[in-house]
Image (cartoon, rainbow over all chains, first blue to last red; front, side, top):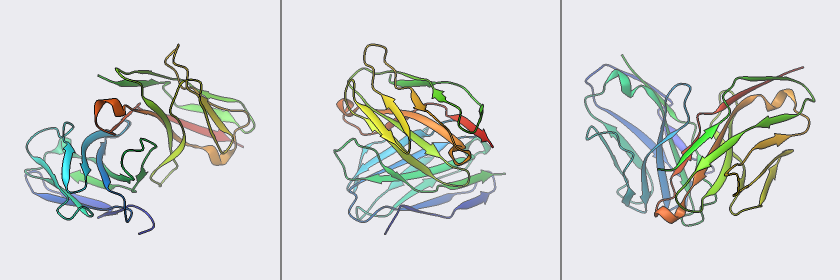
Length: 114
Length: 114
């Protein structure tokens, strides 16, 4: 596609529920990243995929968070047993890997846990 | 670990005023440096970048110079417009660490009044 697409744009869920957030990267971009942006803060790195594999998952806060990219394109970020502190904007970005020249970000999914 | 410190906002200027947003960084390797911008209701966009010492990134009248001796990458614009109102994020990427993840500052909100 022309840009990075994230769905849904907004998600409200109850504490304890499971959620899935989807990211559709730019066609041909092999690198995909997930970030979390809390109110008034800069984005914080969660996980980086190179193709189908997670090359760096050092930013995942705990084992309730998991992400997959089974075919090297679309990625899903999964959050189990959601907590109110998980409320944030979850950003996805993609790039041609190895350039270090910056990514293209999606518009994000605003997750609210009530 | 790597970190970015940027000038706290908010910053309010009149149209045609001079803008400086300070950014300093700490990195174990030799990072690439970026400024991203987030306009109201939109996703993060790459504004400019620099990959080595003394490089100057520029775009849309904004400039920033990679200063290794002072570990800084200050953003400047000679004459701001109302349309420049946005949140600006300084970021670094240290490819030497094996991952292309970005480390962001907290962001600086700029409001330009007519």
